[in-house]
Structure formats: C-alpha cells, structure tokens
Length: 619
Image (cartoon, rainbow, N blue to C red; front, top):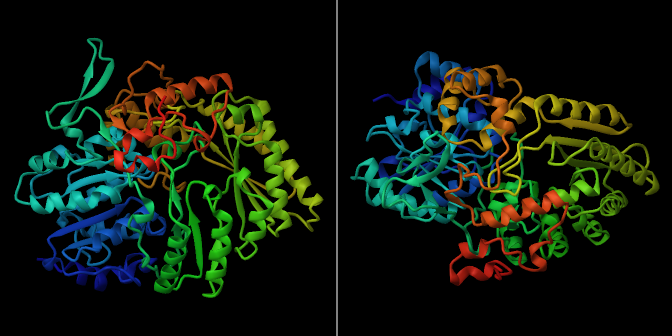
C-alpha cells in the first residue's frame, strides 16, 4: 500500500507555490490514528483553502465530530492549479490535509454547498479522488457522499451526484447520522440510506422520482419508496445557547480571506426581506446569551492567539443587547490586546448609542445594505428602512470616527426602473454631503457594491425570473457612468456569473447532465474570474437541449409546481405567496418580532421548543 503522506511531503509539497495550504498540522488541527477510529469523515469545501478555512460551518462540524474519540474528521479543499496538474499527471489522488488519506478511503464525504457556482468544483474533486461522479455508479466500497448548506434547499440540480443531503442545521443531525452509519457499517449502501431517511433533515434523492403529465410537464417529485417522507423537514437547532460551538479554531499558517475569530451571536432573521433566502431558511431567530458569548470569546482568544474577533449573524445590530454586548466584549478583549470588529449592520439598528459604545471597535470599515435606491422599491422588497435612517446611520458612523463605508445594493430587482437606479446615485451623494456636514476632513472612502438579483428557492421572489443579460449590462453601465464621484468606488458582479447562478438556483433534475457535462469540459472554481468559462457552460446547456438564458429568466406562476416543493424549509408556501402578492402591490410586512405573521416556522419546532419562535399564532 502506498505511503501517500511520505510521497506528498517529500516529492510533491516542495514543488508547490503555496505549501501552507496543504500542511494540515496547523495549531488546533485534529490528527488521529485512523486504525483506532470506527468512523472516518472527510469534510469537503469545494474551493481553495483560503476560502474554505474562512467558513464557519466547516469549523463547527470539524470540531464537533472530532469531539468523539472514536471518530475522525479531516478537511479537504480544492487544490490549486499547480497541485491539480501534478495530481492528474502523476495519478496522485485527492487526499485529506491532516493525514494525507485518499478521499475515497473515508466512510463519509460531507460536502459544503454554499454557492451554486461551486457545483462543478465538487465534481472535479470527486474525479481527483477516484470516486464515481454519479451516486448510481458507486460501489459498496465507495464512501457515501452527503451535501449540506444553503444549496441543499434546492438539491435537484445536483441530486444525481449525492447519496443524500442534510437539510438545515447540520450540527443538529450529523452526529446522529454518523452514529447510524457506525452501527450499520455491515449493511449495503441502500440499506444504510434507508436507515438514514428516518432522521430529521435527511433527503435521499434516489428514493424519489419525478411525476409528469402526458405532455412531459413536471408535476412533482414523489417518494418511490414507502420509507421516504412526502416532504423532508429541515433540521433545526432549537436552543442556540446550548448548541455546540468550538473555541479552539484551527489557526492557519498562511493568510485566509477572513483571518480572524468568528463569534456567532445569533442565527436567523425576523425582518422578512423578500429576496433573501438566508432570512427565510434560517428562521426562527435564536440568540446566545451575552454571558455565554463573553465566555466563548475569551476561550477562543486564549486557544488561538488571534488579535481580532468578528461578530457573526445575518444582522448583528438586531441582537437584543447589541450595545451592551459590544461594550462588554470590547472591554474584555482590550485586556487581551484583541480588537472587536463589526459586520454588516442594518441601517435602522445603528445609532448614536451604538456608535458611542463601539469606540473601541476596530474602524476598518462599516457595511450597510440599503439594497434599493428608492423607498418605493425598498417597499417592494420589504426592506423596511428609509433614506432618513441611512443618513442618520452614516452621520453617527462618521461622527464616531469611521471614514470607510460600504453600501450594498442590488440591481434587477422585480419592478425596478431607471429611477430606482438613479436613486442609488442620489443616496451616495447624500452620504458624501453628510460626511462634509459631520466635519469630516479630506475624502471618505465610499464603496458602492451592486450585485445582480438572483431569484432563490424558498423566498417570496422564487417565482420571478432574472432580467436578461443585455439589460443587466445596461443597468450596470448606467450606474457606472453616474457614480464617477470623488471618494466613491463602484463594484459590480459579473453578468454572466449571475446568469449562470440564476439558471442553476431554480432548476430541477434536468440540470444534472448539464453540470456533469460542464465539469467534463473542464469547468471548476466558477466564482473565480480567472477560471470562469461561460462559453463552456453555454455548450453544456446546448448539448442537453436547454437554453441557459431561458432557464435564468423563467417566470413561474404561483400555481406552478416547483422542483423544491418536497423540501420543507419551515416557512409555508402560502406565506411566501402572500408576500409575493404584497410585493406586487408595494405593501410592506412588519418585523415578526412586532407580532406573528403566520409564516409557519413554529410548526417546524416540536412542542417543547416551540417557544423559540417568539410568536406562535399561525392565523
């Protein structure tokens, strides 16, 4: 048997441009003897080390699984171009970082599905590992491949590549999954999958088949086995304060994208922005207590030596005691020589008090997300903030010493007009004027980022199509011309990438052969400009009888069956339809903390934990 570790360290590693990506022996890395372990799990992140090591979910699962002495979890990332070339030329398989164990030798391969443009990278990694790309082609000796993360909420475009999916909070159910697999290692793949399908949040696509009309129109995905539920209910961590959270994060040798400690203060959002998938699929809001967070932060700092701690949530300003938390954490961390940094904030949650309490926070920059340039369009998307709140927030930020502000917007939103785009320009001009009025010296640094609206499953805007590519480019050019202002830097997202993302995000199983073909043509790391090959993607769609642009622009009727209807994210389709209709009328919906909206999430929680959802009335 080959000694892969010796070959890699002696013959391959010295030839690599960035060897620190592949060492696997960083501070707090977990290295175990596989012969003494009953279950071996590979945690795969389909991107480069610098991206994957910045992902909080991977950190949580890595340490959670390694808490069990008889289990071993190791990390696997997409190799850089230099290592991939060597691996293919010299027939060296994709291996884990910690022990350089071939991916194919693990019992379970868990893949993070963070983004639609990572799907071909998943296939490239399976190919490098020698694992058959299609689940139906795998033998009894191959590992089971599971996918989880936001992408799993519409798993159908990649259903053929995965043995099963975890829908929802993986830390809630993954240990139970591994335990079931440990207890039934002697059973066949099919029998093990039938054991797993009984667990909350587990979806086994091979147990479902598409039903169609006589004309070939999709009707629904229905169970093809009596053990499979008609709808797969999302797994939910009910009490975040009691949930597992590591304090001994792995410390990379080289720099990564987010090279700092991450403190998750709460999960979920009650705001109800109609375009936002995260705001729907991570409901309800679950907070950690201030005292818990302070204790966690101190343990994290002392076990890693990091000099910065960042708060993590969908909107940290919505934490019920955010001012006190920042004040206390800043004081705690100052004694350790550590800075606290703030993430993206809601405009209406940033105030003079918060600015004052944030005096000890590192002022590298603040990010606000107005999303749309006019009040009319903000009402359409249910972004319940006003221009006055934006100006008040940036005034307080400037007065507190910030000079670097980032503003997030979207273009191509439903009902958007050129007046809405010019409203973005107006808001930016108001921000510049506010800086002068606040007595700012020199020029502030204002970054305006405009992403392209991509309709996502399980949102009120899931029925809308994306605007055509030519129109995306026209609107980007309009903004580009009008945002040539002193101190303003305009960033935009590639039209072709957004088009592909939209085509995949709401697709069904008809996209499985498309993604397979794109991978075989060489597509990978599609979110990286230097790797993205739109021409190859177009070829893959065309060869399979599909039009990429038509898939992205497809409008669904409210009565149409959707490819992801069998996935129960907790928010009812009836609620999403109601929000869609309110959007067309330009009507806003209040924050659910002000009174229950009947979204249905409380029904997802068991009776004992239903109080986690602040309001239970489902009228």
